[in-house]
Image (cartoon, rainbow, N blue to C red; front, side, top):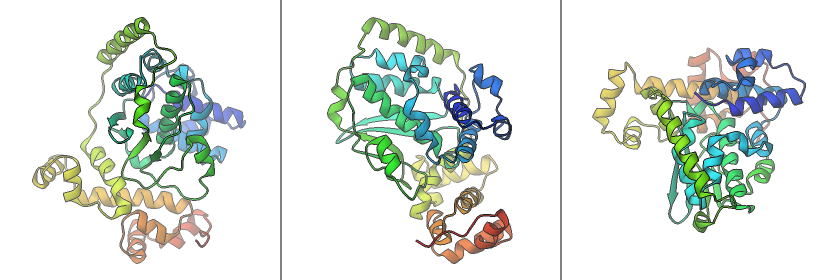
Length: 336
């Protein structure tokens, strides 16, 4: 579940475009009353709703659009416990610990080495279904960083697991750098010296009180253990474009032996090949609707030959990629 801030911001985008939200909310299994009442919502429903809003408003960068101009104080407890910290690293350690108060699926990790890396991942939510929410989170964190220290911080780099192509100038304006897509992980990289910067709102007394509130909220909030299938899917997704989505590799990334991994799958009635095939199918249908070329889709899904993807597409849909596009009313992609 999530606090629903991203859903409420998406709803506001529809209102700005004079678009009736009712059918989009219904398809996403959300209600306007729940959002306006600031009720918690399903993370999966939020991901779907933001995707629906992106299509309806014809804004393919809706996550960045939403993250770019709202008042960061709407983050609630998370904002104040960060803003009252002493240094930037202290603030992000607070965010790392308490981020699940806002979104139970989001996991942050901070790694201070040659670069100061903020890693983002999902637990209990399917990463491959999302583009906009992850981009929203990345820009919110970067805006928070800039506001807390009172400086226009430009990241050394940023990366996202999902696919993007085309003109990147708009996203460069949002982030200040050109992000890398089809990456192994979702990350923002900063200069390590930034971690020591003092915050403009340093308030030790307020921070002590906010930490207590956050700890109380953590104890009160019950979170669901993520299903193993989702964990496996989220491990597979970033490996697809690199043709490395093999059971042995996934087991290693999950810290399991191949035998233990196989036993876990079997215990839950799962099959690695079926999970991989389902994931490829869902992404293939999305990419076809987005107008990507069949050869590009084949690469993104880890097929060695475009013909292998065409055979898989016929098995999934009963149609070739071109036939599927025509049936969906999607034009043929332009030549690269």
